[in-house]
Structure formats: C-alpha cells, structure tokens
Image (tube, rainbow, N blue to C red):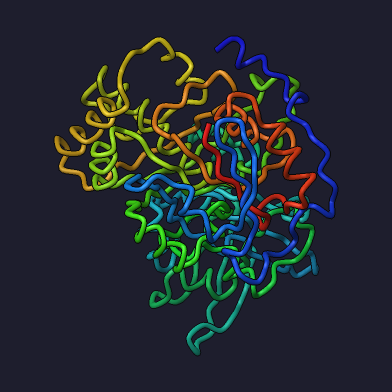
Length: 416
C-alpha cells in the first residue's frame, strides 16, 4: 500500500486536445468505435461487434442506475440566480423512498452562487399536472451539517425542500423543473436530447448525478447479440456521485479523498457470481468498483458476521490492507450471500469509497468495457491497475486513430 499511496498523479497525464472530447454522442450508439486490448495487443472495431470478442457463457455485469435531473435553479427577488445541485438524499436517506416523498424532503447539495444566498428561503412556482405548485428550498447552516458528523460538511449543504401539494412526489417535481447534469467538461448547456442520450437503454433505478458512460454504447440489438452468444447478463446499482469528476489535486494520491457512492446488489447476482467461479466482465468503472468492493465486504463478514450494512462500507485504502489475505472470491461472495440469508434481506445496501490504483490486485473483474478517461483522474488509475500499467499503449493508439474521448466518446474492451 505504501507504494500505491505514493503514486504521483503527474505520471498519469496525457495530451487531450479539446477537439478530441466528444461534445455529443454519435447518432447510433452502437456504431461508436471499439478499441480492443488483449494480452498487450491493440486493435479496433465497431462497438456492435463487441459480443464476438467475449467468451461464450461468461457473466457480464451492468450498472442499472438512472441519472436524475439533479440541477435546480431558483431566482431570488434580487434577480440573482441560485443553482442547487442534488448530491445525495439526507431525509429520507433511502433513494427509493426519497423519490416517493410528498410535501417534504432534504438533500445534501452543492450550491452555485452561494454568496448571494446568505439566508432566507428560495421559492419557485410552476405548473404540474395542471395545478400550480410552490416549491420552497431552505438551506440549513453548515454548522448543523457538521453536527450530523457528515464528512463533507465543508462542501455540501443541507437543503430542505417543501411543497404545497401532497399529491405530487419529489420525483415528479424533478421531472418538471430539474435539469440533467451533463459533465462539466462538455462546456455546453444541457439539451433536450441529453435526456435520452445520457441514459443507458437499461437504466432503471434513479439516483445518479452522472451516467455510467461505458453503458451508453449498448443498444437492444447488442444486448440481444450477447444473449445469442450465451452470455449471462446481470445488473447491480451504484449511484454515481459528482465526485467522479473531482480532480486529483494532491501530488501523490495519498492526499486525494475518494467520494462515497451507494451500492445495491441483489442476491441473484451473487448466486450468478458463484456459478461463474467469482468471475465477471464489468461494464464500466462503476460496476468494477461495486464488484471489487463485494470481495472486501465478504472479508469483513468473515471477521464480524453481525456487521450492520453501514459497517460494511468499504473505506478508501481498506483493500490494500488485505493484500496478503488468501481468500478466494467465491468464498467472499458466499459470505455476503449468507449474510443476506441470516438477515432475510433480498439485497445488500451499503456504500463504497474504494480507490483502485496500480498495486491493486483485481479479484472478480476479468474483462472491462470502458470509455476513455480524463488525464490525471482516478478512473485512469483504475484502468492502469487493470492492464498492469500498460495504459499508455492504449491511449496512444486511441489518440493516433481518431477515437473520441470521455462521456460521449468511444469505447474499449480491456483483457489483461
């Protein structure tokens, strides 16, 4: 772990010209380019041919999270425009319950133009289902957030939302006035088309503020081709947080604090993993983070079978402290299944803060479908760890062969 902590983020830089960042997706999702990297060799194809590169009978895991319209704007009487960016539910904390709430809820938020919102409530009136609704947002002072013990009290703000119609859920309010938060590096306004193109075709569970972008290339026809090839498909949920765009500002990665993201894994996927010897093909880095976290959750349960779901949170550096542990992935997964059985739970709900960087030993993920990531990012560290440091060969090829980068860009299949 000492070596991993002292990785210099400057060693993971590469030139990314502005014109290589895809500002919009191509018209047909599955016609994007596909770079394939297999045992050190690099080539390219079109994404719709992806199934041909995968072993028959393998297990492929997708993140079914759905991006919410998390950006809300309020106009003060002075004319100042305040942006409230929903990050994670505070009351209730359960995502599903949150979107069903009526009359009141609270979120931890980032606030744009905060200096113009010293006190008082923000009010916005709008029409929904033919009735006028008044929505009020009130920011609690940061001291109250600090008192809750929240680790991000310095950057997050607790905002209470109240509205005067108990027939309207918070989900409906977001649909009416929220704005989809496309990535900041696109340097453009959200457009109506993004509501479709910035969601995967299999998105289901609301909660993310950024898309699991590796999944944006899949279409119903590609999914059908996977089925025809005998590849089993399973879904988990990791709600992608705004921290996914957080740059590494420290010289060494030890100084970077990873963000926490919430995961949900149903027993069916655990059973499938056992059938596949604890091995999977991951679609996207969010699926990687969830699957690899399962291994360490299993180890925790070996030491404390009565742990609560909160106790099962995977801390940033925890995996590196277990490096010498000789536990097979399927043994760790069995522990998680047994935990669900003991507690009569259909699914595991917990969180992860895992950082995957060179020096990390992958346990469950054997192949990875992913896009091309920003220079000096934690996602590039994850890729480098997966291909045993060979990331430059992949990125040099992509830059030299007109691949499109970042969220709306092209894809890659990595087989170390």
